[in-house]
Length: 319
Picture 1 (cartoon, one colour):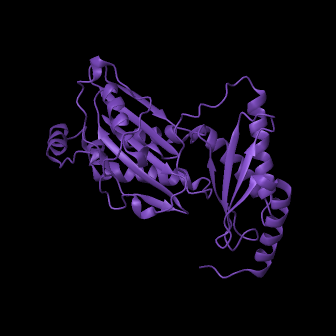
Picture 2 (cartoon, one colour; picture 1 turned 180 degrees about the vertical axis):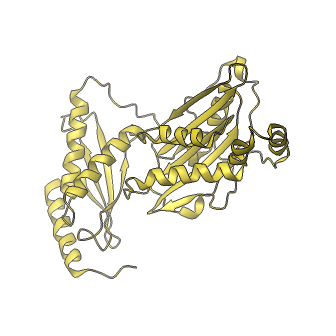
Picture 3 (tube, one colour; picture 1 turned 45 degrees about the vertical axis):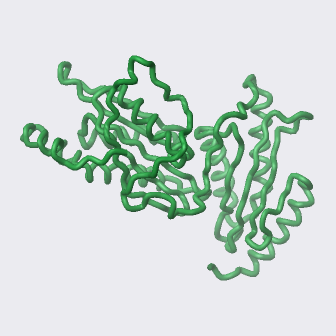
């Protein structure tokens, strides 16, 4: 436990008193000893259309040398919108290092909600799944390359036409997780030879609650079309801007083929900046190495038959 900073403690007390006075019933104390609070924010309409709950944990070093740990909760808040708000909060923190910033955060979120209410966007679909963004028990994740345990299915938009249901589901492998400042990253890999298999693998992954609740599920795939001697490839950021393209670029550099890589990120409330891209690519590279894809890419032009045997003989673990 970090030593208490008397100056930070005093400033926290003053900020909490001020916010309680400003926001009244919108300010909620969840755990006073642990400094956990919740602020309900809406778009200021008589009948609010867009609402969001900002939950914060104030570490002992806040505001002098550390930002608040936070979580954004709203049924409509999905990956891209979460990332946009997080980027705004990060900018405010960087511009106001060492200062109390909760009021600025709340009012920036309120400004975003007001803009949404004034736009032509329909109201939020409250039936959407709320993302779990705080990693409260990091031990729950597979840190040693073990498979996630099957869990209750979560229905997302990966339904396949009946004509594609017979497509074989490839084996799915899970890499070691990387945890940094409460964010956890884990890669998943599947050998694929058709876009339909990509859909099936994604659907299978999303049946697991932990994977489905990740803040971002970034993926990229490359399929080699031998008859045309070209690649069919694509990527998805899932709200983590440019992450999918960076992942695909890594796979191109490694010259891997016939493989789908998905990297799940569970955001832990502390902004990582560019380090998040490093962790995404490291997770992806590690699992490609573990599954011999880099060996395949380095040697395929010299020993195509040998590598075909390697790929057939390597151990497969069903998801």
